[in-house]
Amino acid sequence: MKITVTGAAGRLGRAVVKALHAAGHQVAATDQCFTRELPVGVEVLNLLDADGCYRVLAGSEMVVHLGNVPGLNWTKPQRTYADSSVVNVNVFQAALDVGVRRIIYASSIQVVNGSRTRDQRGGTIPPSVLPYLPLDGHVPANPGNLYAAGKVAAENLLAYYAKFHGLSAVSLRFPVLLAPDDAKYTLTQVQRQGLLDEGFSCLAMPDAAELVAAVAAAELPGFRIYLPAGPGTTLAPQSVEEIVAQYYPQVPRRGQSEYDNLVDISEITRETGWRPKVRLVPASPGIDRATS
Image (cartoon, rainbow, N blue to C red; front, side, top):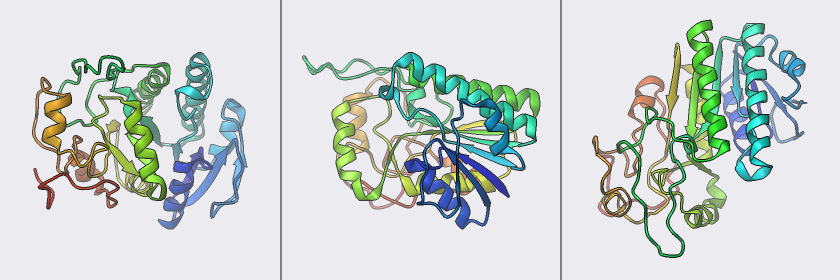
């Protein structure tokens, strides 16, 4: 299958291009930055160029759209939202017009986590507004900043293209993505940020790339949202029960995650066969195997 990957020079983009190439796909890579670290050439393109989007998508059967502003603090919030919105509609509309029938989109767990943080002065923890635990792809949107609001807008666009134009679209609400070689440092930074309604979840970059490859290989009509996560939490070695008691005492429980974390990936596994392989954090106390 010919697959166009936007944002191919980014950390996740490089891993995704390599995973799709290894799976035997013909990959067309594009990014506004050039890199020689890929097994395929990179076409340099700013996705704000609507005409350029038609060019890089021509002949592809699928687009893996990773080419958004990487976070809230890269530029002004207004520009983050505005540029991401234009880029997304440029890519999605060009995909429809040139005959691409499948879209995989890199969303974010920030879509659901609101802005709940610990009070740095008093150390108090406000109540969680999460509707249930463990988290999954069906948690309603609750964006707490314009970066997250832009992701919600993109998901709404994908739902539109799926419903009214018959495209297959999957939004992947990635948690914090960690490269195995710098996971310890990144975890330290994540813990300092103190965002509380992400379920303290994380995912290894290789597993994220393999998820994209698994979704590409699966037949997934319509629009769906997946929330992936790896085993363990960013608060390890605290157990899941300790984390729930401290941070989510009033949130209803609908069961236990298959892993020692607060994210249920059973739907992803059932529909794509994907399971994370990389554990980046210690197992919670008493965890010897997956539980349900």
